[in-house]
Image (cartoon, rainbow, N blue to C red; front, top):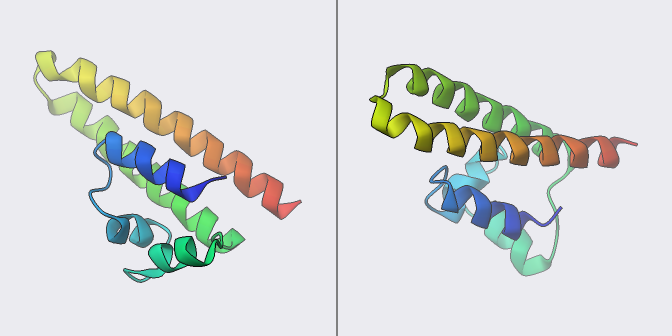
Length: 100
């Protein structure tokens, strides 16, 4: 799975604002993802699992927000949640491939 592509997707959803925030989702320090990009490396299996749990937490927070937002905003939140869940599924698929 391409971490740069995933970063762009999460950034477009407003889930992360910077590569440092993205790195934190993996449980890494601030510049680790940028360093991996420079070295053309990919996170290890445990980092991918931490990312999945981070995305799950964000999705749950979004579900809670959907319950409280104004009706006019609910559609945007729901659509974003659907996209986030798709990304989360892709990450889990990648985790299972790495684990096997």
